[in-house]
Image (cartoon, rainbow, N blue to C red; front, side, top):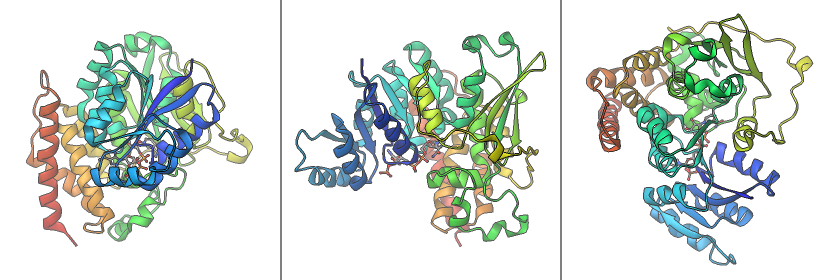
Length: 396
Ligand code: NDP
């Protein structure tokens, strides 16, 4: 059987890597739907190459542009628009696997739709779990969906755990998770120069090539903070059982420490096609196109404790992970607004943590038990509004 794949966020960094994997294994996978937000030229090119049944452009003007660009294509895909279009292709019967690779909380609705339709969800969009972890995990279990992590760290942890880990980490002898972090491009920068960091410098990641939002998150280490929250949901644990370890070479993607003193790690070159291929093929293994790891070339592996004074976003994320309730959704929304403002050069890099911290203070955490998606989306909206106002006050 050829497996149908819906690719949410096809034009992004994860999307392009996923299409590369898919093209290597056309006997096993086919793209049934591709989606993007505004980049019609790139989606048009991908449609010509991968011939999906449906294409979604969230932006209606971009959808019109896509129609024009594909007007001469024989058997052209049906073109949908809006968030409803995303939800539709995440749940369509021809789809078996959904790659959730939209950036930010915008990925939540279609990811949830995929889980509710019982699909295999390949989760790159960590923000979905940060905003609505309880809801998404519940949907996965209620509808018999499978949730496989794409984030390289979580994929590594998944590979180092036994299949029965869902019975609880203590039950399988796990003492703690060691979540590795490269430390990003600013690991060695003098702290007093953080105020002058440009978007280009923040996005120049030393080991990974990624989209701009996650690159800035890596520079502030908010990315690692979001990943701590993601790991709590995926592996049913808490922050007392997760330690962040700076490992600049990005060769060990994370480790699991067991009661008996064993520590299992997953290693590989920093190329997202490895976790993508792993999750698509699981439990089988397939060729990903990634070069074999040459340990002699790597030669050494270094580890450091993160410096929380340098990375206040990481402390904020640990704080909200402990708090729970709406706090993680507020943190995520404020961070998205602050990162966009930094990329537009309206605030400086340290301003990101300030805005996130002030938004968290302005919107105290509320319980989420028994609350649905609309409540979380409303929380997200209020946090964005608050963070926008704070950006306007600080604008350079
Ligand atoms: P990119 O910015 O490269 O791509 C984002 C994708 O999402 C694009 O296809 C974009 O469409 C689409 N998109 C953006 N905004 C919206 C919206 N409002 N509605 C619908 N679609 C939208 O991001 P990445 O590929 O880097 O990251 C994607 C996700 O994967 C993030 O959650 C990130 O944290 C996670 N991730 C990424 C890794 C990486 O190596 N890049 C590693 C681990 C996790 P368009 O092109 O039209 O704007």
